[in-house]
Amino acid sequence: MSKLYDVIVLGGGPAGLAAGLYAGRARLETLIIEKEKEGGMIIQTEEVDNYPGAVEGETGPSLIAKMIAQVDRFKTERVIDTIQEVNLTSKIKVLKGKKEEYQAKSIIITTGARPRLIGCPGEKEFIGKGVSYCATCDAAFFEDLEVFVVGGGDTAVEEAIFVSKFARVVHVIHRRDELRAAKSIQEKAYANKKIDFIWDSEVIEIKGKGLVSGISIRNIKTGKITNIEASEEDGMMGVFVFVGYDPMTELFQGVLEMKDNYIMTDINMKTNIPGVFAAGDVREKSLRQVVTATADGAIAAVQAEKYVECLE
Ligand code: NAP
Image (cartoon, rainbow, N blue to C red):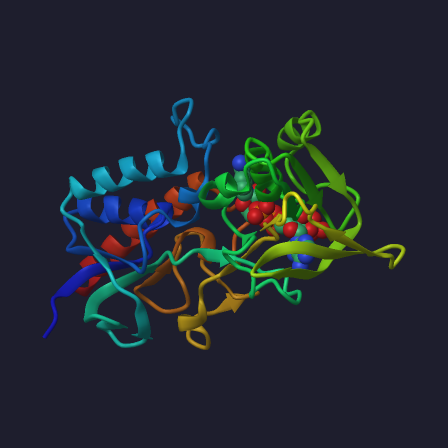
């Protein structure tokens, strides 16, 4: 029989690492299961200046490296595995992974969210061939090229600024005529000479031969369709998509209460199932930031500790 943990934290982003830290400090037998690499979406961020205590020049990866080192000091175990099936309703919670089966008295779900797709023809076909969802990962490939950034939120505008360090020109395509991004972020983008804006527009097709070499955009107000081709000299262009995120909750559909696929919790991170908690971007909440994710993780771990104590 596999080891019985007090707490299994599913997901190794900021919420999961904070939960692992608090559970480890409480001397609970704790395991963090992460499917790829710890850090979650913040490791794609080049500059973190809104996490209290982050030093100037702090990046997503540097912040996460410190969180991992801190978790490791408290003997919280960490494993890489992909969970494919869960049984959360029994007293002992069971998680079946690709590699192993795991058991715990309580579970903290911190699976986060993944980038949303535009959903237009050509988008999936050209992922990694001109279409990207991660500026930190891919911006350098577009040195001196023309790039289109889709979206008008904090992520789109911040990433447009980052991409402009490499690209010759960055066009932000937004479906409305005003940005959703915070004013301070907008100001930086408006002041950036390499960035311009294509308002009231959506991308309806991404085209190319092997690599992206053209896009079609439609003006939502006028219906006018514009086809844009890469210059012969460039031969290709970049399309960075930042139109929001979808929570990773497929495993819990029909089991946990959700709203728009986000897990519903109370203020103590409790879900509708005793012993099952959710923290971070995966839960229904008003502000999805590293600072709120880590706070959620801490609360969930303290509540899990109380829950496990009551079982004994
Ligand atoms: P978001 O705030 O949900 O913004 C998504 C953007 O994409 C919106 O401008 C939206 O347009 C547009 N959009 C949505 N679906 C679309 C579609 N199908 N086609 C075209 N455009 C579409 O997402 P986000 O910018 O990724 O931010 C997510 C959360 O992280 C937010 O809470 C944000 O504040 C936070 N965040 C904070 C920071 C920071 O504080 N430094 C940095 C990054 C992210 P509409 O505006 O018309 O809805």
